[in-house]
Length: 130
Image (cartoon, rainbow, N blue to C red; front, side):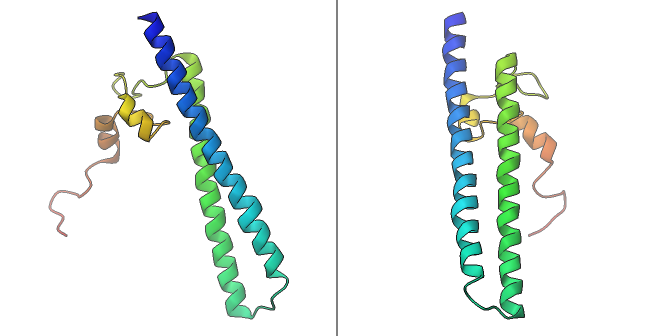
């Protein structure tokens, strides 16, 4: 049993680290390639007020995406802390193990699917129509 747990923890840790590397690579690529290229071309092409507004909007969207990645990286670090403390893969609400299939899809998931559904509430309120 202990060996199985150690092997499972090693697999989970590797999965978390792979996901963290992937997220960092996306952030780096976005910051250095997209924003760097945008800054380079921004000063080469004269812009009117409308074009400048569009550039500002695109910059804001880029910052929002970067912030989402930052939040994901924070959740990833929290998951790694839980792994080190022996609490990773355990639902925060019911205390049951989170299935490996869920952790493969959402490695930093804090709870099992049924508890997550309870947290989020119904997709459509009672009596709602499409």
